[in-house]
Image (cartoon, rainbow, N blue to C red; front, side, top):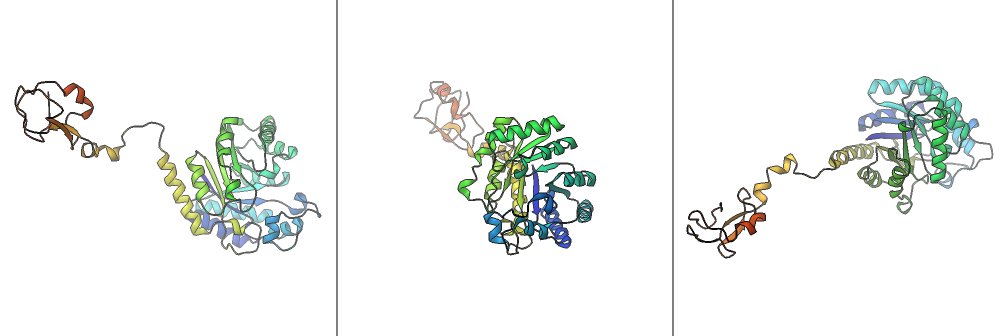
Length: 330
Protein backbone atom coordinates (compact mmCIF):
# COMPACT_ATOMS: atom_id res chain seq x y z
CA UNK A 1 0.00 0.00 0.00
CA UNK A 2 1.22 3.48 -0.89
CA UNK A 3 0.40 6.25 1.59
CA UNK A 4 0.38 9.82 0.30
CA UNK A 5 0.48 12.62 2.87
CA UNK A 6 -1.32 15.44 1.06
CA UNK A 7 0.25 18.75 2.03
CA UNK A 8 -1.55 20.35 -0.89
CA UNK A 9 -1.68 24.10 -0.38
CA UNK A 10 -1.56 23.91 3.41
CA UNK A 11 1.78 25.71 3.26
CA UNK A 12 -0.21 28.93 2.59
CA UNK A 13 2.36 30.01 0.01
CA UNK A 14 5.34 29.67 2.38
CA UNK A 15 8.36 27.61 1.36
CA UNK A 16 9.43 27.27 5.00
CA UNK A 17 6.04 25.83 5.91
CA UNK A 18 6.18 23.47 2.93
CA UNK A 19 9.53 22.17 4.17
CA UNK A 20 8.07 21.65 7.65
CA UNK A 21 5.17 19.72 6.13
CA UNK A 22 7.59 17.47 4.27
CA UNK A 23 9.47 16.85 7.53
CA UNK A 24 6.28 15.90 9.36
CA UNK A 25 5.16 13.58 6.56
CA UNK A 26 8.53 11.82 6.70
CA UNK A 27 8.32 11.53 10.48
CA UNK A 28 4.86 9.99 10.16
CA UNK A 29 6.20 7.31 7.82
CA UNK A 30 4.28 8.28 4.68
CA UNK A 31 5.64 7.12 1.33
CA UNK A 32 5.02 10.45 -0.43
CA UNK A 33 4.39 14.03 0.56
CA UNK A 34 2.27 15.68 -2.12
CA UNK A 35 1.84 19.33 -3.02
CA UNK A 36 -0.04 21.17 -5.78
CA UNK A 37 1.76 22.90 -8.64
CA UNK A 38 -0.05 25.64 -10.52
CA UNK A 39 0.05 29.21 -11.73
CA UNK A 40 -3.10 31.01 -10.68
CA UNK A 41 -3.58 32.89 -13.94
CA UNK A 42 -3.36 29.65 -15.95
CA UNK A 43 -5.89 27.90 -13.74
CA UNK A 44 -8.84 30.28 -13.28
CA UNK A 45 -10.44 33.35 -14.75
CA UNK A 46 -10.77 36.54 -12.74
CA UNK A 47 -14.49 35.85 -12.32
CA UNK A 48 -14.13 32.32 -10.93
CA UNK A 49 -15.79 32.06 -7.54
CA UNK A 50 -14.63 29.85 -4.72
CA UNK A 51 -16.48 26.73 -3.66
CA UNK A 52 -18.58 26.93 -0.51
CA UNK A 53 -15.97 25.09 1.56
CA UNK A 54 -13.26 27.44 0.27
CA UNK A 55 -15.37 30.50 1.06
CA UNK A 56 -15.88 29.29 4.62
CA UNK A 57 -12.14 29.09 5.21
CA UNK A 58 -10.77 31.91 3.04
CA UNK A 59 -11.40 35.60 2.81
CA UNK A 60 -13.17 36.79 -0.34
CA UNK A 61 -14.94 34.84 -3.08
CA UNK A 62 -12.38 35.03 -5.89
CA UNK A 63 -10.49 31.86 -6.70
CA UNK A 64 -7.81 33.91 -8.43
CA UNK A 65 -7.00 35.92 -5.31
CA UNK A 66 -7.03 32.82 -3.15
CA UNK A 67 -4.77 30.84 -5.47
CA UNK A 68 -2.29 33.68 -5.87
CA UNK A 69 -1.74 33.55 -2.11
CA UNK A 70 -1.24 29.80 -2.19
CA UNK A 71 1.09 29.24 -5.12
CA UNK A 72 4.79 28.43 -4.83
CA UNK A 73 7.50 29.20 -7.38
CA UNK A 74 9.26 26.75 -9.66
CA UNK A 75 12.40 27.22 -7.58
CA UNK A 76 10.41 26.43 -4.44
CA UNK A 77 9.36 23.07 -5.84
CA UNK A 78 12.92 22.24 -6.82
CA UNK A 79 13.99 23.05 -3.27
CA UNK A 80 11.22 20.95 -1.74
CA UNK A 81 12.01 17.99 -4.00
CA UNK A 82 15.68 18.18 -3.05
CA UNK A 83 14.79 18.39 0.63
CA UNK A 84 12.52 15.36 0.37
CA UNK A 85 15.32 13.36 -1.18
CA UNK A 86 17.50 14.21 1.78
CA UNK A 87 14.99 13.14 4.45
CA UNK A 88 13.89 9.87 2.88
CA UNK A 89 10.42 10.64 1.57
CA UNK A 90 9.31 10.81 -2.06
CA UNK A 91 8.24 14.16 -3.47
CA UNK A 92 5.00 14.37 -5.42
CA UNK A 93 2.90 17.24 -6.66
CA UNK A 94 -0.31 17.49 -8.62
CA UNK A 95 0.16 19.60 -11.76
CA UNK A 96 -2.78 21.80 -12.74
CA UNK A 97 -1.53 22.99 -16.11
CA UNK A 98 0.72 21.77 -18.91
CA UNK A 99 3.63 24.00 -17.87
CA UNK A 100 3.48 22.46 -14.40
CA UNK A 101 3.52 18.97 -15.95
CA UNK A 102 6.75 19.92 -17.71
CA UNK A 103 8.25 21.34 -14.52
CA UNK A 104 7.50 18.25 -12.47
CA UNK A 105 8.79 15.99 -15.22
CA UNK A 106 12.06 17.93 -15.20
CA UNK A 107 12.25 17.67 -11.41
CA UNK A 108 11.99 13.90 -11.78
CA UNK A 109 8.80 12.76 -10.05
CA UNK A 110 8.06 9.07 -10.58
CA UNK A 111 4.27 9.25 -10.89
CA UNK A 112 1.74 11.76 -12.22
CA UNK A 113 -1.26 12.59 -10.05
CA UNK A 114 -4.31 13.75 -11.99
CA UNK A 115 -6.78 15.70 -9.81
CA UNK A 116 -10.51 15.15 -10.07
CA UNK A 117 -11.13 18.52 -11.66
CA UNK A 118 -8.93 17.73 -14.67
CA UNK A 119 -10.53 14.42 -15.60
CA UNK A 120 -12.43 16.12 -18.43
CA UNK A 121 -9.50 18.30 -19.62
CA UNK A 122 -8.44 16.64 -22.88
CA UNK A 123 -5.30 18.73 -23.66
CA UNK A 124 -4.14 18.22 -20.08
CA UNK A 125 -4.74 14.45 -20.19
CA UNK A 126 -2.79 14.19 -23.43
CA UNK A 127 0.14 16.05 -21.85
CA UNK A 128 0.04 13.68 -18.87
CA UNK A 129 -0.07 10.68 -21.18
CA UNK A 130 2.92 11.87 -23.18
CA UNK A 131 5.11 11.65 -20.07
CA UNK A 132 4.49 7.87 -20.09
CA UNK A 133 4.79 7.94 -16.29
CA UNK A 134 2.52 5.89 -14.03
CA UNK A 135 -0.69 7.78 -13.27
CA UNK A 136 -2.86 8.09 -10.17
CA UNK A 137 -6.23 9.30 -11.42
CA UNK A 138 -8.64 10.87 -8.93
CA UNK A 139 -12.27 10.34 -9.86
CA UNK A 140 -14.22 12.77 -7.69
CA UNK A 141 -17.40 14.16 -9.30
CA UNK A 142 -17.05 11.60 -12.10
CA UNK A 143 -19.27 9.05 -13.78
CA UNK A 144 -18.01 5.77 -15.16
CA UNK A 145 -18.28 7.32 -18.61
CA UNK A 146 -16.04 10.24 -17.56
CA UNK A 147 -13.46 7.82 -16.22
CA UNK A 148 -13.59 5.61 -19.28
CA UNK A 149 -12.99 8.61 -21.55
CA UNK A 150 -10.09 9.85 -19.44
CA UNK A 151 -8.48 6.41 -19.45
CA UNK A 152 -8.80 6.20 -23.20
CA UNK A 153 -7.19 9.61 -23.69
CA UNK A 154 -4.32 8.84 -21.32
CA UNK A 155 -3.58 5.52 -22.98
CA UNK A 156 -3.81 6.89 -26.51
CA UNK A 157 -1.31 9.58 -25.53
CA UNK A 158 1.21 7.08 -24.17
CA UNK A 159 0.33 6.02 -20.61
CA UNK A 160 0.48 2.22 -20.26
CA UNK A 161 -2.95 1.16 -19.02
CA UNK A 162 -1.51 -1.22 -16.45
CA UNK A 163 0.36 1.69 -14.82
CA UNK A 164 -2.85 3.56 -13.90
CA UNK A 165 -4.43 3.54 -10.44
CA UNK A 166 -7.94 4.91 -9.91
CA UNK A 167 -8.65 6.86 -6.74
CA UNK A 168 -12.20 7.03 -5.49
CA UNK A 169 -12.90 10.32 -3.72
CA UNK A 170 -15.48 12.96 -2.96
CA UNK A 171 -14.47 16.58 -3.56
CA UNK A 172 -16.45 18.18 -0.72
CA UNK A 173 -14.26 19.37 2.19
CA UNK A 174 -14.98 17.85 4.62
CA UNK A 175 -16.94 15.04 3.01
CA UNK A 176 -20.08 13.97 4.91
CA UNK A 177 -19.87 10.30 5.82
CA UNK A 178 -23.16 9.70 4.02
CA UNK A 179 -21.56 10.87 0.76
CA UNK A 180 -18.38 8.80 0.94
CA UNK A 181 -19.90 5.82 -0.90
CA UNK A 182 -16.82 3.69 -0.31
CA UNK A 183 -18.32 0.73 -2.16
CA UNK A 184 -17.82 2.75 -5.34
CA UNK A 185 -14.10 2.07 -4.95
CA UNK A 186 -14.65 -1.65 -5.43
CA UNK A 187 -17.05 -0.86 -8.27
CA UNK A 188 -14.21 0.98 -10.04
CA UNK A 189 -11.95 -2.04 -9.68
CA UNK A 190 -14.60 -4.32 -11.14
CA UNK A 191 -15.52 -1.92 -13.96
CA UNK A 192 -11.99 -1.18 -15.20
CA UNK A 193 -9.85 -4.08 -13.89
CA UNK A 194 -7.32 -1.61 -12.50
CA UNK A 195 -5.80 -1.07 -9.06
CA UNK A 196 -7.88 1.27 -6.92
CA UNK A 197 -7.28 3.55 -3.97
CA UNK A 198 -8.97 6.24 -1.98
CA UNK A 199 -8.38 9.98 -1.54
CA UNK A 200 -10.05 10.99 1.69
CA UNK A 201 -11.60 14.32 2.64
CA UNK A 202 -13.61 13.21 5.67
CA UNK A 203 -12.80 14.25 9.22
CA UNK A 204 -10.79 11.60 11.06
CA UNK A 205 -9.17 8.38 9.86
CA UNK A 206 -12.02 5.85 9.97
CA UNK A 207 -12.78 5.91 6.26
CA UNK A 208 -9.17 5.51 5.03
CA UNK A 209 -8.84 2.52 7.34
CA UNK A 210 -12.03 1.02 5.90
CA UNK A 211 -10.72 1.67 2.39
CA UNK A 212 -7.54 -0.21 3.20
CA UNK A 213 -9.61 -3.15 4.43
CA UNK A 214 -11.50 -3.10 1.13
CA UNK A 215 -8.27 -3.43 -0.83
CA UNK A 216 -7.10 0.12 -1.54
CA UNK A 217 -3.57 0.12 -2.91
CA UNK A 218 -3.16 3.89 -2.44
CA UNK A 219 -4.43 6.06 0.41
CA UNK A 220 -4.21 9.85 0.20
CA UNK A 221 -5.05 12.16 3.09
CA UNK A 222 -4.61 15.89 3.73
CA UNK A 223 -2.61 17.05 6.73
CA UNK A 224 -1.62 20.41 8.15
CA UNK A 225 0.56 21.98 10.80
CA UNK A 226 -2.42 23.95 12.14
CA UNK A 227 -6.08 23.05 11.56
CA UNK A 228 -7.12 26.58 12.52
CA UNK A 229 -4.93 28.26 9.93
CA UNK A 230 -6.63 30.32 7.20
CA UNK A 231 -6.86 28.37 3.96
CA UNK A 232 -9.25 26.12 2.05
CA UNK A 233 -8.15 22.70 3.31
CA UNK A 234 -6.82 23.09 6.85
CA UNK A 235 -10.05 22.32 8.70
CA UNK A 236 -10.50 19.00 6.86
CA UNK A 237 -6.88 17.94 7.39
CA UNK A 238 -5.13 15.77 9.96
CA UNK A 239 -2.61 17.08 12.44
CA UNK A 240 0.91 15.61 12.15
CA UNK A 241 0.18 13.43 15.18
CA UNK A 242 -3.05 12.14 13.61
CA UNK A 243 -1.22 11.49 10.35
CA UNK A 244 1.27 9.30 12.16
CA UNK A 245 -1.53 7.33 13.83
CA UNK A 246 -3.20 6.85 10.45
CA UNK A 247 -0.01 5.65 8.78
CA UNK A 248 0.70 3.15 11.57
CA UNK A 249 -2.89 1.91 11.54
CA UNK A 250 -2.89 1.50 7.76
CA UNK A 251 0.28 -0.57 7.93
CA UNK A 252 -1.29 -2.77 10.62
CA UNK A 253 -4.40 -3.23 8.48
CA UNK A 254 -2.26 -4.10 5.47
CA UNK A 255 -0.44 -6.76 7.46
CA UNK A 256 -3.68 -8.07 8.91
CA UNK A 257 -5.23 -8.49 5.46
CA UNK A 258 -2.97 -11.50 4.87
CA UNK A 259 -3.82 -13.84 2.00
CA UNK A 260 -7.01 -15.43 0.66
CA UNK A 261 -6.26 -18.84 2.21
CA UNK A 262 -7.75 -20.17 5.45
CA UNK A 263 -5.44 -22.30 7.57
CA UNK A 264 -4.03 -22.20 11.11
CA UNK A 265 -1.42 -19.46 11.48
CA UNK A 266 1.91 -20.07 13.22
CA UNK A 267 0.83 -18.06 16.27
CA UNK A 268 -2.37 -20.03 16.82
CA UNK A 269 -1.11 -23.50 15.91
CA UNK A 270 0.26 -24.03 19.39
CA UNK A 271 -3.23 -23.46 20.81
CA UNK A 272 -4.88 -26.28 18.87
CA UNK A 273 -4.32 -28.96 21.50
CA UNK A 274 -5.14 -26.53 24.31
CA UNK A 275 -8.49 -25.36 22.90
CA UNK A 276 -9.78 -28.49 21.19
CA UNK A 277 -10.95 -31.78 22.70
CA UNK A 278 -10.14 -35.49 22.50
CA UNK A 279 -12.32 -38.53 23.04
CA UNK A 280 -11.70 -39.77 26.59
CA UNK A 281 -13.19 -42.32 28.96
CA UNK A 282 -16.15 -41.00 30.95
CA UNK A 283 -15.70 -43.81 33.50
CA UNK A 284 -13.65 -46.96 34.03
CA UNK A 285 -13.82 -49.08 30.86
CA UNK A 286 -12.66 -52.70 30.83
CA UNK A 287 -10.84 -54.42 28.00
CA UNK A 288 -13.32 -55.94 25.51
CA UNK A 289 -16.15 -53.63 26.58
CA UNK A 290 -17.83 -51.76 23.70
CA UNK A 291 -17.50 -48.01 23.54
CA UNK A 292 -20.85 -46.25 24.01
CA UNK A 293 -22.17 -42.74 24.42
CA UNK A 294 -22.43 -43.44 28.17
CA UNK A 295 -18.81 -44.46 28.76
CA UNK A 296 -17.18 -41.90 26.46
CA UNK A 297 -16.98 -38.10 26.54
CA UNK A 298 -14.91 -35.33 24.98
CA UNK A 299 -12.48 -33.15 26.97
CA UNK A 300 -9.42 -31.04 26.49
CA UNK A 301 -6.57 -31.32 25.52
CA UNK A 302 -6.99 -32.04 21.84
CA UNK A 303 -3.93 -34.21 21.31
CA UNK A 304 -5.84 -37.51 21.16
CA UNK A 305 -8.56 -38.88 18.91
CA UNK A 306 -10.65 -36.04 17.50
CA UNK A 307 -14.34 -35.93 18.48
CA UNK A 308 -14.99 -35.82 14.73
CA UNK A 309 -14.18 -39.59 14.85
CA UNK A 310 -16.95 -40.16 17.41
CA UNK A 311 -19.16 -42.25 15.07
CA UNK A 312 -16.21 -44.52 14.25
CA UNK A 313 -15.28 -45.06 17.90
CA UNK A 314 -18.82 -45.74 19.11
CA UNK A 315 -19.42 -49.51 18.91
CA UNK A 316 -15.75 -50.41 18.73
CA UNK A 317 -14.30 -52.68 21.40
CA UNK A 318 -11.89 -51.33 24.03
CA UNK A 319 -8.41 -52.81 23.28
CA UNK A 320 -7.41 -52.40 26.92
CA UNK A 321 -8.60 -51.04 30.24
CA UNK A 322 -9.19 -47.27 30.36
CA UNK A 323 -9.32 -45.11 33.48
CA UNK A 324 -11.65 -42.06 33.69
CA UNK A 325 -10.31 -39.14 31.57
CA UNK A 326 -7.81 -41.40 29.82
CA UNK A 327 -7.53 -40.72 26.08
CA UNK A 328 -9.16 -43.39 23.97
CA UNK A 329 -7.23 -45.21 21.26
CA UNK A 330 -8.27 -48.08 19.05
